[in-house]
Image 1 (spheres, helix red, strand yellow):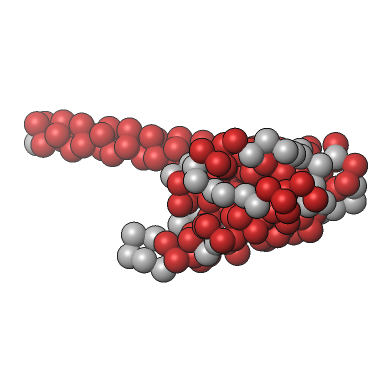
Image 2: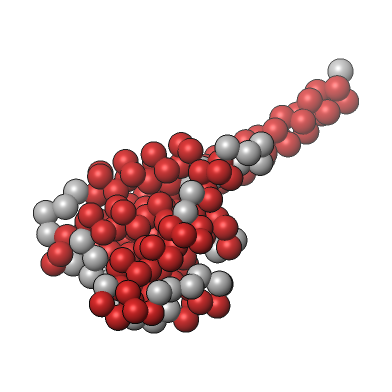
Length: 170
C-alpha cells in the first residue's frame, strides 16, 4: 500500500503543478486583457477629440470583429488605443479598425503594430504601408489622407480577416 500511495501522491503533485501553471497563464491573460482596456481608457481621457467617448463602444466593436475573424479582441482594443493617439475621431477609429485587422492578418503583423503603421500613414508617413505593398493614391493623399489610406487598405486587404475567419484554420 505504501508504494501505491507514494505513486498516487506523486501523481497528485504533478496534477497540482499542471493546474497551477494553467491558473497562472489564465491570470496572465486576464491581466493582459485588462491592460488593453486601461490603455484605451487612458487614451480616451487624454485625447481632446475623444472627450466624452466611452471605451465600451470600442470594446464592443473589437468583440464583434473577433466573432467573425481569427483576431483577438484584446489586441484589437490595444490597436484602437494606439490609433486614438494619432488624433482621430471616434468614428474614424471605428471605420478604420476593421481595415487595420485585415492588414495585420494578411501581412502577419500583430494588430498593435499594424495600428501604428496605419496611424503613421494617416499622419503622413506611408513608408511602412508601401513596404508591405499597399499602394496609396498620391493625388488623393495630398488632399485627404484618411480617405486615401482607407481606400488603399480597402482595395488591397479589405475583408481578408473575415475571409480567413471563415476557413478551417480561422
